[in-house]
Image 1: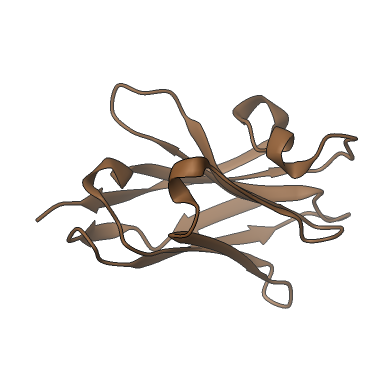
Image 2: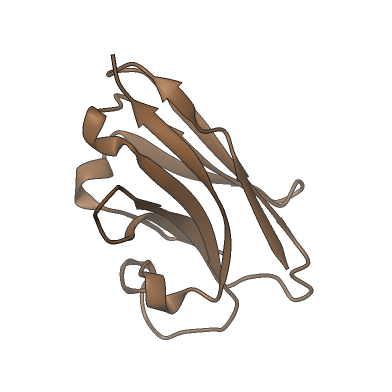
Length: 128
């Protein structure tokens, strides 16, 4: 199993970035997949997640209306479109996936301890 994140970089406040996460090796697919981030000195937090079965999505409150998670199933890739970026969005962004079924809704799945596989991080820096 491999999750390869890319697309990070330096962007000015108000700008946009699109992160990509290429998933491979999931022989039976994944149950949920999403994005997490960790800023310096802070704990890793869930940004956005989506379930494979019905496409239910979750966004952390501060990301609602600015970030959009999407999938290209043909390419086994998950995207995070980030608009109206703020300096406080600066963090290392990680892609993670859960493979086992859960009775929990996506909002409760989008936590660090519910994920089974983690990809590399990609740095996002929002600064003028």
